[in-house]
Length: 81
Image (cartoon, rainbow, N blue to C red; front, side, top):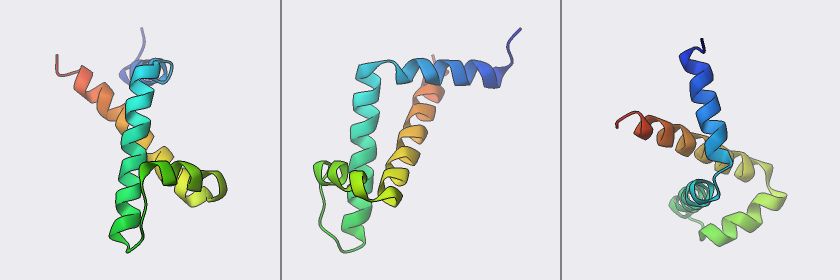
């Protein structure tokens, strides 16, 4: 029998294979990072963050953090059924 953490990991890994979910979560993550940049006095859009991710590892890491959080949020929302 699988434990709850392995079920959650399997479910989240399945979400990563779903293009619709990943497109939504990635765009939201990019928007959040762009908001952080604007709040710090910069000027950015989600498209700009996509480009910045290529050369700036801290930005790419921040986007990944938001993506991971978004996927976890999707999992938690699925439990509310």
